[in-house]
Amino acid sequence: MHGSVSDLASLTRHFVRVSRETCSRELIASLPDFEEVHSILDEKDLNRRLGSIGSGFENRRSVFAFLDPDDSNVPLIFFEAAFELGTNKNVRDILSGGDHFRGRPDTVVPYSISNCKNSKTKGVRGLGLALILRTREVLNRTHRHITNLVTTSPVPQLTRWVSEDLNQTFLEKHDPRGLVTLSVRDFKELAVQSSEEFARNDEHIHEQTRRLGAMFVMFVRRGHAFNFDPVAEFHLGNGARLDDICPNANTPSKFSQSWGLMANYRYPAEQARIRNAENLTEARRPDCSTEVWNLLRGPSIRA
Image 1 (tube, rainbow, N blue to C red):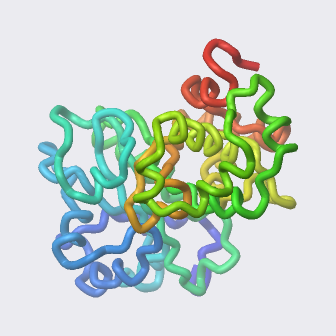
Image 2: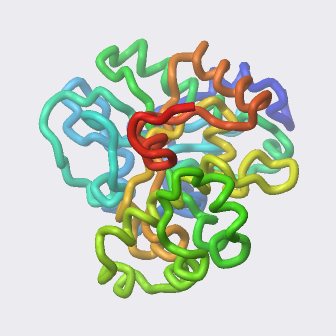
């Protein structure tokens, strides 16, 4: 395997839960340079994210990675996760490091995945999914009370799409019940608002942008890609379900991407995940929760 990672299955031998006890200082020190989603601010922040998954879950954070088969000091890909009781609806709660719930966690929440752009992984497909599934497999074996895997993910292309591509035809096609009451022009004006300006809008405006966010993730296509948004394409294309669109959920620095909206993607049991991915290829419509469908079509209407 020297010089490549063409055999994803063999990477299971190089899966680690990253910690100062099990990994080199060199590897630990490299993580802030590779982090692609939520910048690691300092040593204290890094230690908080490394966390502990001991039986007491004193610190409900962790980092999981595949390492270079030829050099255990080099990560190929890693993701950061929190352990929650139920689904996380605000990544700021995770990043703050505070324990905002009591009780034993039942859900692992990946909130940042970073491909370290190692030359060995160039062109390799499935590396991120392999890491997520391997983490679930290990946790199912070692922490049986953790039964759910639900991400808290950004929607990085939403307001760009609104500004450049949203049109009346799209709204008419995907909003047959007329639940969207704002005009295309209204949405485009909202897309350039600052976080302070947006916060002054009423609840109806916030709910309208949340509804449009659900439509974007579920229905927008670009060329041969399933979805214009790369994060949605990754999770839905790998058989996850769109579980919710969460308002005011991202960090202030990411507000302009999506009005602060984030998405929960739920990974079901393996057979259902594979079936979802196959159905997406055939029908080109991803699976979603009742909560999301109610945003799209209103209560009690499901096609």
